[in-house]
Length: 235
Image 1 (cartoon, helix red, strand yellow):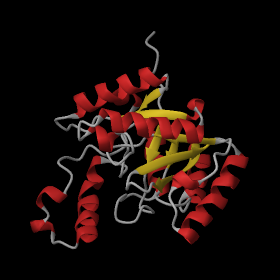
Image 2 (cartoon, one colour):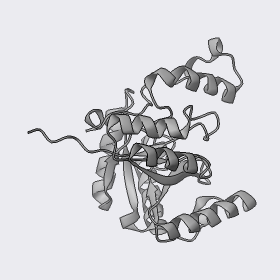
Image 3 (cartoon, helix red, strand yellow):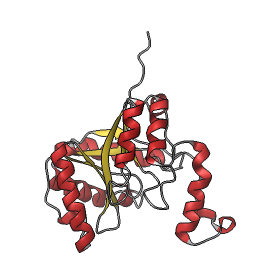
Image 4 (cartoon, helix red, strand yellow):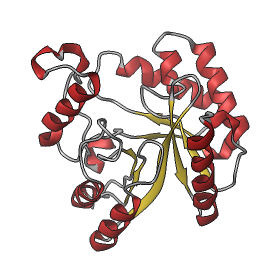
């Protein structure tokens, strides 16, 4: 008997990531349950705005909703952080309040047990230098995350969005993870629940850049792959 693939999406963003995600958190949770995910993490930008709705939907669907957020680093990169414990959640709530009040980046926080750092997608602190062939910069960024969170709490994120350089980027990320003895995992970093939701995401992109749709051109995503996928597709 063939064993069913197991998967949890750990880096999803909802419409609470204003003008980036295009699906409501409960729609992401329901779609994840339909696809057979064991759990889903909603990692909206700068807060836990959709977490209550996600948890309510997850309870109805019989899967787990993981609390997370995406933080701004001072170099402009985006860092997803998950809460592994209740005390970690409470500490990150306090830290988020401080970030919003003083405008400092994540690098200024005090590492707290119960936080899990994901290295993120193409806006993350590892992919940004790797996309410029700056392997030394990616190594420095990874070492900074290890110093801040602890080696056991940093996970290297891998994704394939149907882009030409996906393979090269994935190889570099795996090499870096092996070199630093870091675990790695697959994510589709979804911005919407289903492929049919892509037009709304395009509309939000146009609003974010203040351009009409017929003039957006390369500002739009090259395809509609940033949706939740099945465990079989992600295996």
